[in-house]
Length: 190
Image (tube, rainbow, N blue to C red):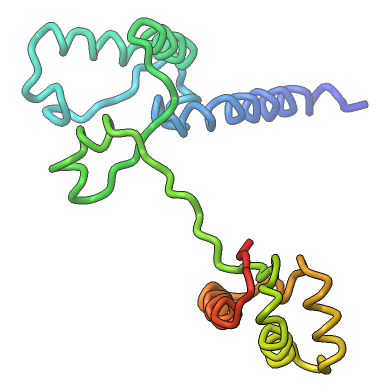
């Protein structure tokens, strides 16, 4: 059990870690700086003549001064009340560089259309063959599939529908399809 002399130090460390655990998430929202948490009863110092107060009306300046006197908890409650009052959500749309100055408002209004992801690999599938062109299709299959003899190619063609090649790049799949359709086969790319 800790002795009486270490208790205040423990209490201070606990208080300090509690303040940091609350302050970091709030500070990341740019409500207050973490160093201002330790002096939560003190107003946050602001530079004279800087920021919005330099050209602001007396009404705005008085509101800013009142907000600066708030504690962290009160500031958090104010932010939540303003979000509820003006129906503000946490969603933030990031607009980069030139879009921010010229088309920022148009980009915020227009819904982003997601383009479907184009397939890069295909299955080349033999669906059916023209009976009159069967011999030509068998020869073409034999040429396309390595290590396949004429008998295996004949069994392969007769057992259609069957996958000829799997995970083939688009350009190669198109080439295979064109070659087999030229000799009388019906090919499907999946």
